[in-house]
Length: 152
Image (cartoon, rainbow, N blue to C red; front, top):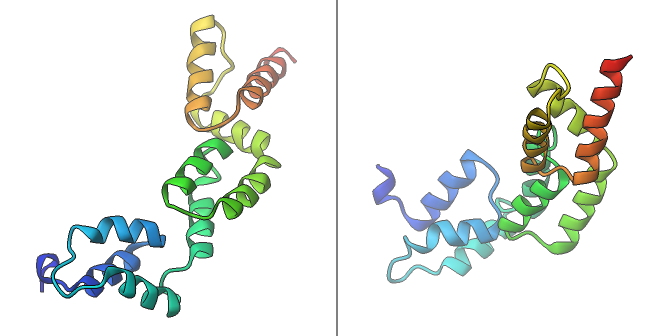
């Protein structure tokens, strides 16, 4: 049976078998496939009652996949896009900010072999870390420590 002929529940289960999805994500992905007689809200309620949809697991999954390579701002944006509760996002981001500097140093070290020598290199390395969601203060501290370590 191809993906085109799957029932709404079959589609939902296939999506959930690939990775964790929030209720809002499934609602968006499945809305185009609702046919007469389908009750998307009831289906999502059923999946949530059976713990197939679990917001905590979605949050942990994103943190596990992204924390090593993304800053708190970028992860917050991703969690918000998944439609997760604001309080859960705030708690997760607060935990991430404690390790933000170390994670930024690790991301920088995997990408660059030397500290910036020119303003252009500095701008490039700054942009790289900023687009990964690290704060401006953290980026400045990473690049400053890279330059100072190189001088030693």
